[in-house]
Image: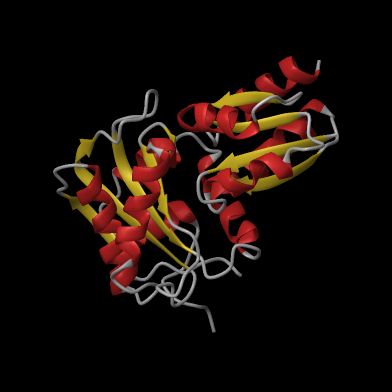
Length: 152
Length: 94
């Protein structure tokens, strides 16, 4: 998979979420809006955290919400949700979460390359703050180094 | 040498851990094969591995899945902190 795109529909900035489930659901809604997944994918992302715990909070303030490939994934995609009020996911070190990245992949084998770009972005420790403080989808795309749509 | 990066679903987080573990190894000048795995597959994936990298949150489940093992289970807090991962690996391999 090439670098994922991030259309405006997959971005929600300064959103309100009462708890971690609501925060993950916002990421699911954004993936659904962009066409990457159907609505049920949000439930599966929540199930992953219910089953395995808050390990998806992979860095201070950042949750990578995701589930396995499935019929509810239409195509690979990412979504970005920033929270107006940080939310606790129950992680011992990395709470509270300010940014939820939603990730949907259609094939487990092919996703490593697309995820590698996230490693590049977040190896810079300031990236999470810059995302949390982004005021527009354009600013989010600039931090992640992605486009709104596939370049011609 | 083999290192396994584990997460619950076997996608996403374990792939990030794999990429950054490879960066940490390069920084240390060490060579190892790093494989991503989900929790269900970790026992067979780690049969010939020296180190299993995972999140603090998953460490107990990984220990339970592996049972008696020669693998060292290393808990990573920040998956994007190559320095943290390098420090763990240097301690385990040094």
